[in-house]
Image (tube, rainbow, N blue to C red; front, side, top):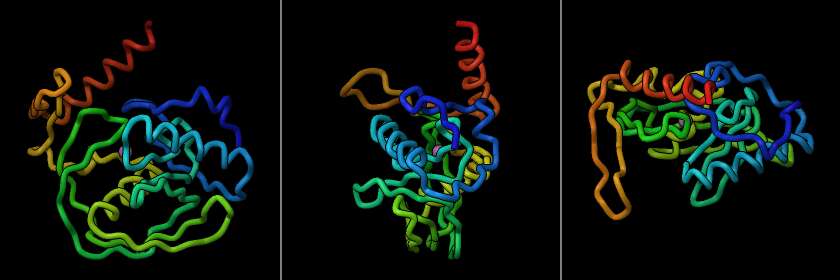
Length: 190
Ligand code: NI
């Protein structure tokens, strides 16, 4: 697997083509796969996220990390085995920073994957964990939470300065996405 220099990897934002790609299977857990997972965990912790998919660092391969009971857990070639019930709750994404909105997700899921030792495991999750798992699995299909967000709940959460209450600013989906695309354009011309 070619990932370029791992130290150069960073979390990409809305508009980056990798976020819309269907990730391809990882297969064998090589040294490079392990290094990629380690770098993703680093980036996720740095950004204070609960999960990160490889697409989000510009590498469309089926690999995701999710924080489970304070422990970053690596999922290689994960598959959704079972989903039950439904629940609506707020969600955000490290690739769409400061944007939040409500998404309907299964209440309970069962996921199988392999760990860094190449060993297959099954995990059942409910509530927030089920939500995080579905969110990351979606990333691996090139899907984002804004694809299914209840637009009437979409908002920016803007922090003015430390210690102050964040400001909630409702937004239309189209306007929010434009903000990310304009920021991307700006970066290209810098
Ligand atoms: Ni995300």
